[in-house]
Length: 337
Image (cartoon, rainbow, N blue to C red; front, side, top):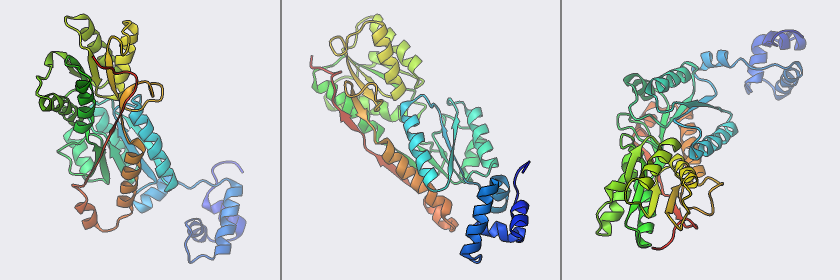
């Protein structure tokens, strides 16, 4: 048979009405089980594929769920996307990935495109300054925030206790006798950047020590920034004896730059990383993150929201937040001084 197979083709084969075919494929209980099975068998034989666009127009939604993140090279987001895709697939949905590189205009286009495709729900790690239109679109959709929290957006949030995470890594280095501790972190325009820097500073304050601000470097959470920042720390003036890399890509950039400069870890420099990339564990002392737990909780919550029929129930969840704890995993990259 040439061309796309339609309901009409199946109906002609079985001498049934097109409406009966459609109801059978939708598992309408008013159609007998025998007829449903016969229709599905012929549909499979002919290679029928449901028209998702038409179904979305009828129902007002599709089986698509959007995941909008800033950076797929970040091991954390890659692992999270894989876990969310599995959760969605098990529930009969398809995850569609959008990468913004923290560009607000790109973010707006991707949000609009997914909603125009009748996506049933969105999971977003928002850019530092979403456009007004992006915020308006998200506020009218079934949406959850992931990792970063935008105060202008009153939708549920799933993330990590970032301050406690970096506090634990910094306190570990202080306990080992380090005082000249460097910090590579994201800009404080990001909620995660503010929280992680606060954890670094709190560790020094609680130990009765001055925060070594001359060793603090903030910028884009990318490997290139971390590599450049570390090189400046290592070649300009007094060197740090230890560094906390407050991000997965920042950890990558730091390790790459240290290798290029011939810095021995931990003989020359103790390092606390962030995340659980398999190629750096178990040798790296790192802040381990419950990625799959976050994905499971976020995905299941969003799927429940999609299935809800009571608007009041959805509104009551608007301010909900779920915070996960990290764990410091000791490795061979830190030593006592």
